[in-house]
Image 1: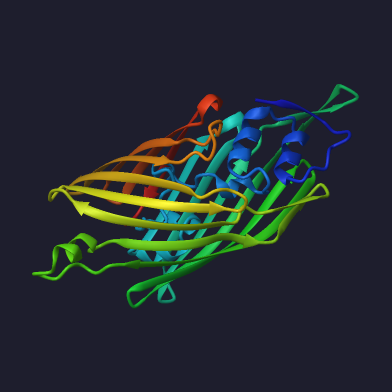
Image 2: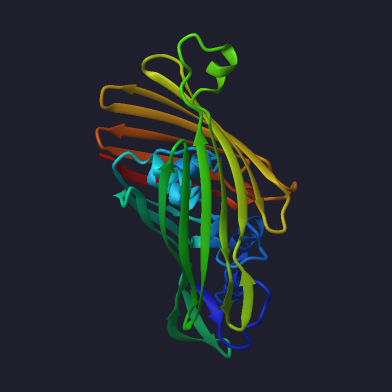
Length: 331
């Protein structure tokens, strides 16, 4: 869908994202979602879901490991990737934008290294001069490229990641560099004859991360900080039967200028041989009554051998719903 953009008198606002929205004349929906994710910050792509599994779990995934998308949430959990892994996902986001991500991880240098990319493509805009179309099509978007590495040191996992984020509106562009650090620990399995408390805590993972620590993104003469976040999470797997496993997780996330946002999620997996089925759901707190960010999320997964398909549904209140689809390879 094309929208109309006027090239004269582009306003210089505090938020680089608001500059983008005004420059391309996008309607209110994307602006509203940007406000939910921290409207005072640039590079909204860093604050949006980066994988269908994480989206379905309301992003309560700081302590949830096992796949390469940890690069975008909790770099220390990259160390839980067994050998190799790669995934890609995409969704038609709000206001005719397209949100996507791809990431791969492998064992390297005594740990696990990962490389990933996230993108948010704005809809095309037809340039207008003196209220007349010129026939020129304007484009824009955001691109974030991340590289990370994690290693297990005894019973503790540590990791770090660096991200280069770039935002473009027609010929104007800006970029910034950010860094993430994380730490995670998993309690050992309970020994035979251990107390009930020890058995209850066996396999519990506690993890924390600080994200998007960096400079300011300058665009069209306006500078805005990146959406810095601190997050802490806990997760525990529970074996319900030989074929059925439940993974419960909870997170608290603090973003600059916002209140603490708690979230909780559960993933139920049935596995028989090489076939696996997943059902996922999450809940998170809305910080105010008219916030569009989904309070409830659901999703599912289907895996066979080394391949898996994942899906997540997110309802953004009056702004509409999004459907995230992804594919993952993990030999």
